[in-house]
Image (cartoon, rainbow, N blue to C red; front, side, top):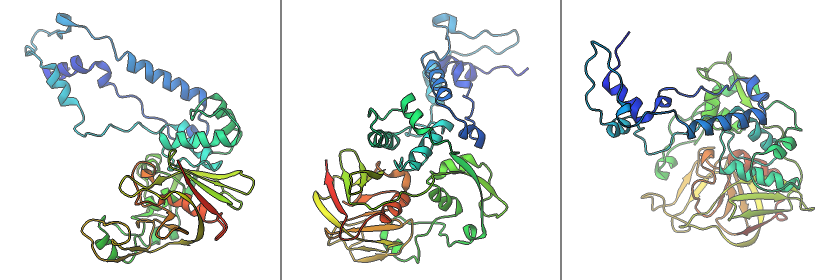
Length: 379
């Protein structure tokens, strides 16, 4: 049997035995997601909280010294603080929680009810809380933004599967892709298309998913083969109706589209301006919408990007500055549009416009009425 080194013993002492026992990976199979229940989710949360509060009984003081068997090398005095520091992640970012099968199901059902959580990523977060609040308001429930039994009872009336299998097609694989998308507008302007980077990114957006979740659900999948079947979210049909007015709520970071009877047809998390370039105030109208728009960059009219001081025409594509859809507003240079990084909606600023995921912008564009739909900025 291999003898424990003093470094291993120091790590155990510094971090506890639980540091060496990684939690089991979540079951992200089709069956586990489609049968995920509120009871199982709450039980997992209780177990995680208990483990965090009681990471393992650790001896203190002199009792902390590890026993040395005959013949073992004596353990040198362990600098446990240094050992613990050495075991810490070097990245300044907190590690992401693993996606949870129940949260995937919750997000899909919210999206299917047209209370968009932004990207479906299987993790709790601010955009999911916004979607829950919007759903609760639309269904005359107590509004708290929390996944609780009442919310789950309402959502689970939709008994359809949250995820399903999908087989890649030749059209999926043979689309035009661009392997590298530059961040500089001058470099962007030299390209013919700001297309998807590959089939995985394209399919993630088609099914309203975070690309990381798509890859986690399909480890080792070959996204360049028509023989490949993958597991995807099933967000259901797009919202229907005619939007009479749009409310862009700056304080909530959310957009609401309402019909003439004040019924919410869809809601979505939104990036609304920034400190440097705030969004407008007041009310305006929708002029119209344009799919796959090019972007006319003019530093004299709005903002300067990088060292680009001349006008540029940025080509169309889902990875362009305004994504795959532009909804033009009556205030010049302002619009509601898509975004190249759907996971960043509500988490980073915009240049005054209202930024949605590409799929939410496309859904909204199908509902607006040019010259009739009003847009109110509030909050």
